[in-house]
Image (cartoon, rainbow, N blue to C red; front, side):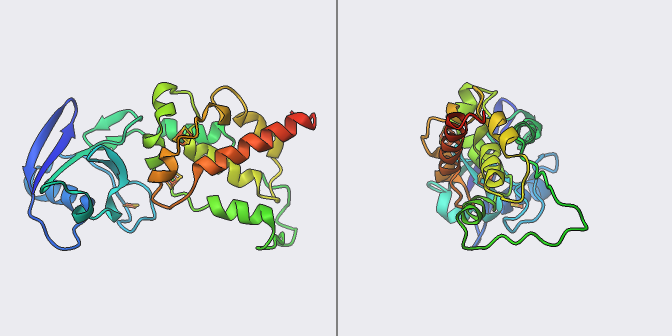
Length: 231
Ligand code: SF4
Ligand code: SF4
Ligand code: FES
């Protein structure tokens, strides 16, 4: 199989043997270990948990450790590049700082109101807020949705699907004490109202989450808080 790898402004081509159940990450690892030890890339778990292996594969953002070559190679040909919408550090490694800085700007950290002296807070699994929080909580921070989002491309300030999805998880967490502060943080020009709802993030999320749905929920929650005079 011929594999084109984006390195800086240019592409380099490598010949990589195919084998059954081969993933795109296997291909990158083969290139680095056998053909060119200087190739830079990032991964950790290889089982779809850490979120560090995302890259562009044939121009589509994907988690490479769980993407099989058989599913994406076209005519025995593959193109691999660094994740879109983030600064490239080297070869296939992007700088994730602005991605995670936006989680902080969206107040993506849990603000507890209890102390260690308190008992566990009961949150019934069948309650609506718990189900809404559960539906969005499995994010692995891979950045695939962020790379898929054209609004991020046009407006680098836009908080983006992952940070807003995280904010929505916490807005629905009844134990959290930062709800209004968080709604204020996501209601600005670069927040949930900048989303054009064109669902690329949801189509691409490898964990099958729906940042689009989460952002729509944030829009409703912000509107309600405004009507109630809380924001
Ligand atoms: S739905 Fe919103 S966040 Fe998702 S890709 Fe479209 S504009 Fe970006
Ligand atoms: S929402 Fe999905 S695509 Fe986006 S960072 Fe989380 S797991 Fe990755
Ligand atoms: S290497 Fe951890 S998610 Fe792919």
